[in-house]
Image 1 (tube, each protein chain N blue to C red):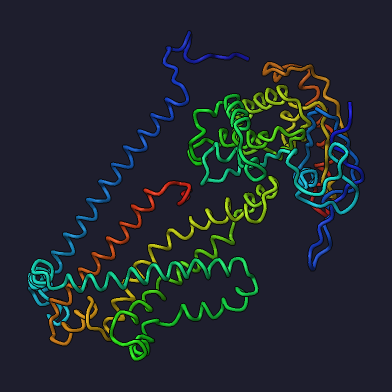
Image 2 (image 1 turned 180 degrees about the vertical axis):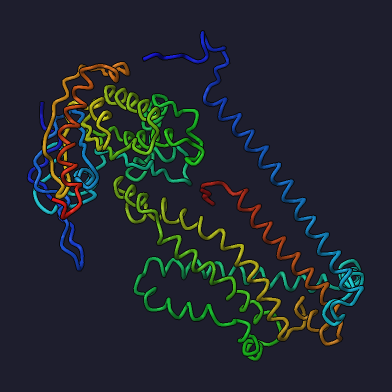
Length: 287
Length: 264
């Protein structure tokens, strides 16, 4: 048997420590991530250009009836009217207020009920089927009833927004508290942790990693709920603006409001993402 | 030498609803001496992890009695450290927070605990990573942290359930050497579970050979290799002799039980 040593003779003294290699690898990962981000962003901008070009062509050549697709310039005009001359700002404030209230109340109730479901098994067994049933019906259908009961002011909108924010948080909180890695549970047992310590060190942080992604869905849900309830009957808010425009056949104005709502939704998504990234691992664990 | 872990007639049977019960371990007698490094080797399903979990107080035996330092095992005990196959570090705690967790659940983390934790982190080369989160560590480093966590209460008994089986061969050898260093610095009784014969021989004073269907302890072998055991031992003939002996004890019986039913 012969053994050949590579490289022949002594290796060049370029030995790097494990940590130096780790630093190099991290830098390379970062560069790749940056390149990917730039590529993704340019693809998204490209898609936007395609959408705008198709829109302009479709509207100019009347491929789609103007009752459904207004001219882009008309929509921009409506946005200018609403945002720069400021007619919509007050309504935006009302909708955001309803959304925020619905979100906060919905998230709070979702966590409380989720915890009850996770820890009181009989409660979960008895009520979970009805919660699923409640989840499946269109919440907006009860808006007219709520308006009859609570009037045209904010209350019915906050209730609908709360309901839409509540369910995603409920399911994720109850799953996060109950579905714990069996190895981690075994570890807590092995180190003699009490039930309270198991909750404090294992179940709660584990639940946070489930709940945080659902906040995104809950916030967008609260916005949708508020606007939908405003469409049914309101004196203020973007849903109210939409219903007024519909009454006057102002399709361009409706598109303007819808674009604004889409932008608000995207911004909320981005803000939640940033908050999640800024919070320390100890609060929002990432794998 | 006095007895550290006494396993007397211990057996474990799992009841399965709608199926015959499984005998995971037939009645087993085994006594580990104080300060001894003892390994259990055997194929999957031979009951080696079952023994460890019962000694850890995580699993109640169906029959027999278990004692550590003369005291009956009734549940998990702070003077018993345990390392699992997976590092199982909580990902929302830093390395340091993870390793002092076994102290924290029982009493405040005092300065002497901090000093001991830092000492262990230095011994395992983790000191620069103490404020990192587990996901930022390599598999080998995670398992080192898990060992430090098991040692933080300075236990008299250390239980290790295939702690290095998920690591590559080179990392495993490095960690074997580190474990021996930690063990000789503060002697303690170690019950080590593995399915790697060479690892068991390299580390142990004695090896228990187990077989499956039903799970049972068949032989106990003395490993008469001098200490300290150094990496050069891995290429010595004496070492291979012991490895061969252990392999022979596992081999044919394992093959026999592995044969498909009805071919005999």
